[in-house]
Image 1 (cartoon, rainbow, N blue to C red):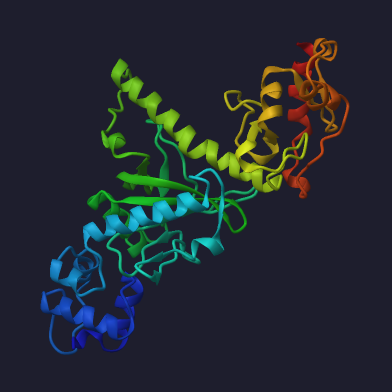
Image 2: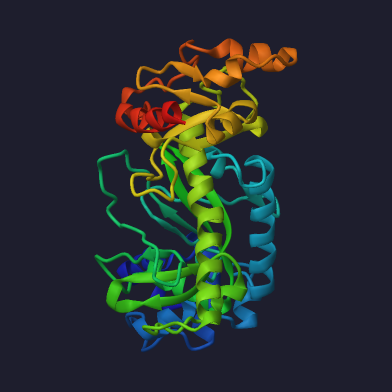
Length: 373
């Protein structure tokens, strides 16, 4: 048994580096000691640089001790977690609760995909971070760590700024080193997350206390930060921006809106998630078109398209309007009852929380454009 496991040294080792406790931890650390991961004599403190090596080990014998996964096993775990998430989120479309995220199992053992009180999840058996979390914050509040988008169009994930060298940050750096995918959990409501997967850590910006993320490994090619980008660089940047919008902004916005409207169309109260969209009141290409619940409406596909093309409008007092020339048309029963019959009716579904309801100013701006058309 490794003497370095006695007393406060063992406590620090387990807590800082998230190694297994109990007899399993003793066996693993004893094996590590035999490989030279610990310094000094019988009552020595663990050597910090050696501990970092233990935490980041790829030593096959340490992995074979059954407590730290090999890189191949890490890939197996992450593929299994991705498939498990896809089944429970409608292939990444719907939000998932914290409670469900704790129910994942790997090889018959429970392995939660989210930590309480930590934004970075590195299970004891893993060499690298398994998931990252961005907490939910209501409109008007700021996150403790504000994740941003860089000039290259790729998202950034903030380090633990209070202690840049903590095990959590090292775990993210290790995911980059091993080129392992991670799961990004974006808070969309209290206790609910949009799971973005797979995501790759492709770089770090230490002076800004942040990691660079990408949605596929092909995006790992760095973009020169030149004042006058070449056509190729600009094409790559546009691709990154489009991927960020499709893989991050749009799913997160949809989940926030669906949670607020309880997965129900505001116009007709249809409740079928695969037939529902999150519609922007003010398009995200406009300056006021922020990805906020108050700039969103849950609309079924039958009513989203008419809203986008100006056939259907919604006023600031939550009434539906249908364009005059459409009201004079004669067509089938769906058109008569599902479109024309909605004229001057009130919305059938609004968020229960007033703070989540559509912004009247944004509705008025959009309705003015509808009427002028």
